[in-house]
Amino acid sequence: MALVDRISGALDSGPGGVILTSVDALINWARGQSLWAFPMGTACCAMELIAASFSKFDFDRMGTFPRPDPRHTDVMILAGTITEKMRPAVRRLYEQMPDPKWVVAMGNCTVSGGIFYYDTYSVVRGADEFLPVDVYVAGCPPRPESLQDAIIQLRRLVAEESIAPGRRHEQTTTLPRPKAGGDR
Ligand code: SF4
Image 1 (tube, rainbow, N blue to C red):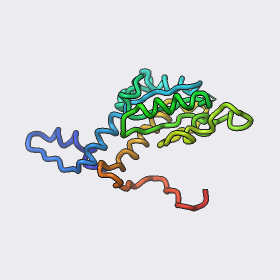
Image 2 (image 1 turned 60 degrees about the vertical axis):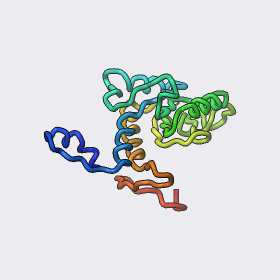
Image 3 (image 1 turned 120 degrees about the horizontal axis):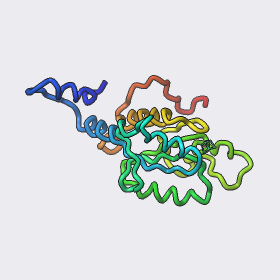
Image 4 (image 1 turned 90 degrees about the vertical axis):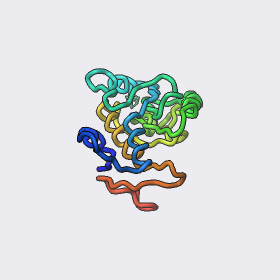
């Protein structure tokens, strides 16, 4: 557990508490706890994306607020089928987001084209054909809890980043990392 995860406990310990951490850890903690979302709902998966913000699931408690303006957001949540006609508009909206920024691909259509993977001339076969996707959420459609779990996974990725160019912090994960050049 990073020291920053115990900040609230340290603050509760009364006067005289001292917090020692790195600038990277503090910035990544702040970024990870307030990943404002740009909801890019393009088809039926958008219903689950919308449901995630309603009171039953309450996305806001995770610090993830949907904002309609790409210039106010940190993470684009792509939810739904992306057509070739939409691709340039989605790319343009992504480019209008300020750095650092991340992308979540929600649902099979966004991940790989889904049911439109075969025999289609109009559907993009995966958002990663034109955007740097950070987290993939499988399902047709995925439930809101899956999207919330994706934000938790994204926080782990954010925690690996550094404000120093080219530097990263390795994190221990519960899943084995893929081997470079290994079997897929
Ligand atoms: S993955 Fe399923 S629910 Fe989501 S956009 Fe595609 S067809 Fe619709």
